[in-house]
Amino acid sequence: MPGYNVHRLFNYAVFIAIIILLHIRDISIINLKHVLAFGAGYYTGTVLLTPDLDTDSTAIKKWGKLKIFVLPYKWMFVHRKSSHNIVYGAVVRILYIGLIILVMYYLLFKSLPAETIFSSVYVFIFLIGIIIANALHILLDTLL
Ligand SMILES: [Zn+2]
Image 1 (spheres, rainbow, N blue to C red):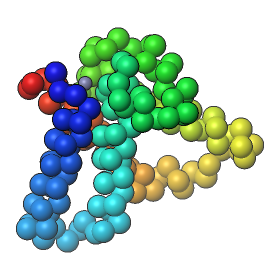
Image 2: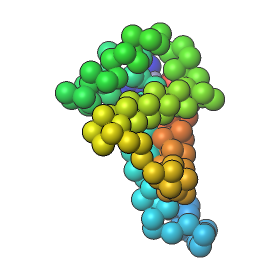
Image 3: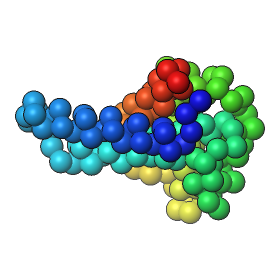
């Protein structure tokens, strides 16, 4: 079973390969902002919002004092079961953290964020980055 650092290095290597491939192919519809949004999501999905939040993992330790927010996730999910589902595992984690962020936002500002934040193409690309990073995690878990 690959550990946290093996997952990280694998995802970073795939990310570099994707960037080199995009550069070689000269895909002009993708600009630097798209790459940064994808990279931020991909990094989040690799380091913080990983499928291994369902167990005592380095990923949970990376949350530091904010770990209190992800511990209920760990308690709710059995390690390597539904949280490691390639189809809906990442979506459930995104919804879980998204709900916490919305509640915190509401408690701080007494309102919800503007609709335009959610309809931004960059938020969508960020989420795709998380989903792909999580899918690679599950793929590596399956292979090793
Ligand atoms: Zn795993």
